[in-house]
Each structure stands twice: as C-alpha cells, then as structure tokens.
Length: 423
Image (cartoon, helix red, strand yellow):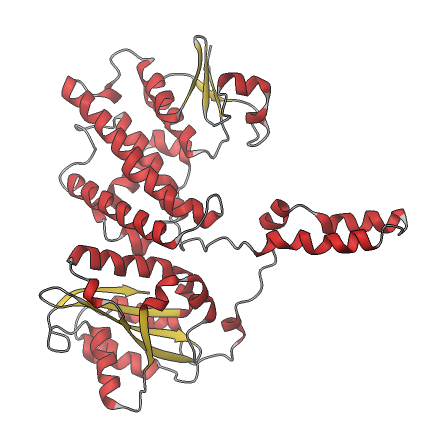
C-alpha cells in the first residue's frame, strides 16, 4: 500500500518526504482533504501523534512523526538508496548536514520569521541574534559550496533534500535578494536544487521574497473588548438588531487574519515628486565606471529637495564596535529591518577604521521632509543612531554626502572597512 502523509500540500516539512519518495521510487500520497487546525485535532490523528504536530506518516508498521525521521524512513524503504551515499563516511556526512540544516538554518529562519508573523513574541534583540546566527551558518555553507555542487559527493542526497526544503521557507518568505546576494554559492545551490525535476514536481515554481514581512500588529486584538460594553448596554434591542450586531463581535483571530483593506501609507499621499526613486536605484546599480561623473552627477540632477530629504546618521555607541564581523553583522541586521521602507528610501552604511573601535556612519534618502514615522515605530535600530538632516546648500555637507554614496576610500581620513547599500 502507498504510504499516507498527513499534512497540508504547502507544508515544507512534508516536502522532504515527498521529494525523497520521488528520488526513491516509493509511493507516498497526501491524506485527502487535510485541514490544518482541524484534521490534526481529531482523536484518530492524536493517536498517531499525541501533540498534534504535522507531518505524520502512516505506514503498515505504524505511524511516524517528525519530518526528518519521516524522510529517513522513506529513503530507507529502498535498499542501497544512493540518497544516503555509497560509503560509511558518506552516510556520516549526510547525517552531519541534516543536523546542520535543522539546527543552524531552519531554527534561525524560524526565529526570525515566526515572530514577525505573530506566531511567537517579537523581541528585537532575539531577532538580531537569530539573523547573526543565520548569517554565520550561511557563510559556512557558502564556503563549502564554493567547491562542491552538492553537500555530499557528486549527486543529490537526503541532506540536499532537507536543506533545500528548509531554505525554501526562508527564500520564499523572508530571505530577500539583498540578503542572499552576500552568499552567491548558496544562491547558486538553492536555485539549482529547486529546478531539479524531482524537486520542481513537488515545489512548483519558486519565487524569492521581495520584502521582509512587517512585524504583526497587536492592535486589532483589543477591538473586541471595545464592543462588549455596547452589547451589555442594549440587552433589550430587537432580536433582528442583535443578529446584525453579531458580525461586529468576530473573534480576535478572525480580525487579525483580515486586515484588508490596508490604509494607504501617508507617504503615498504626498504631492508627486519629479524624482523617481527607482530610476536613481537603477543608475546606482548599473554604473560600473566613472561613478563620480555618471552616478553622483546623476543623483544631484535627479534630487528633489521638496519631495525627498537626505539624512546623515552616526552610531551612538561606536566604543562597542571592537570586533569587525560583529560590527558588520550589526549593520547588516539594521538594513534587513529597514526592508519595510524599501519603496520610500535609499541608504548607504559605512564601517570605518583600520583598528577597533570601528565607526558606523550612514547616509539615507527618505521620501518626504522627515524620517517616516512608520520607520521610527517599527525599526528599533533607528534610536541607536544620531540623525542629522543634510543641508544641501552647504557645499561641505553636499560633498560629504557624495563621498558616502561613492564609498570613497579613505573616508574622512580613515580606511573604509565595509560599505553596505540599501536599495
């Protein structure tokens, strides 16, 4: 009989077993009409997994839960399966990379993504730690993939399947191109894997996330409390009117799931600007030579001081920047959290100095005459910097801004350790 996998058809953990089954020639089918939150709460399901988590694989020998264990079972259902390599050391390396994919990649993507979706409590320091750990893991992975097409040996193994499924959640939900471009070998590996026929059959067309999800708002949860006094104050209303009021009492979960229509961003209501931000970003990205003559001149030709404003920022606590990679990770995390402003901003961040403590400075272009309020509200890093509006009538300030866009080295008499762009 075919093995039955109890999970939704978009569950990345279920994809592991389904892709392994395609490579192994093992029959695995999804349970029909599975509904998360309903099917996994039934007595029948809880007999298979008492804590109600998915996926669960139903086999003639009994149920199996935990996605990696399920993928291993499916793989071992075929004798001498090449998905486990051909030697004892291959087997050990496959298991090594499975653990890495779970503990270093999947865990840190989840710690970054799930709080933003409202599944767990959002704590900015915890997010910053998760991003730093994820970058460390992706950096190590990129080094390995620089000289290897696959994780183990010269063909797809179970380690590749599990790692790719874990990366799939990140690439499709939170790892934007600006983030993954720092790890070109990981990018090459991921897109190579998801376009393999057995992967593509299960995953379909994969698209990379364009923005980092904003932190889920907690405000709607308070709305049902405001409707209760009205219900108690009018207990003698006609039954018909009470029925009409019931929709207003929809539970908090339903209200949180339906935040539409979204209010317009106040910046969208500003008068049109002659400066088209995307035109500048394209000019910046495409200028490879004569940057000062082409891009910098082009910027000042485009710049609209009525529709946009320029801001210098200086990190307040430079004395803490004693380790170069930690300082660069700090800047990278800040840029990731600024993704919510991508439509309205452009920025350059510089890490300066030959020896610690390193200085962190930046230049930002924002729509409007002030730093957008939603950026101040949502991005906690903003308060870690001193912000000063650029006076473009002051030639010294204008030249300093030009230098920062250009990544001049040395900058302000000190060597430029690193420069990162937000565009």
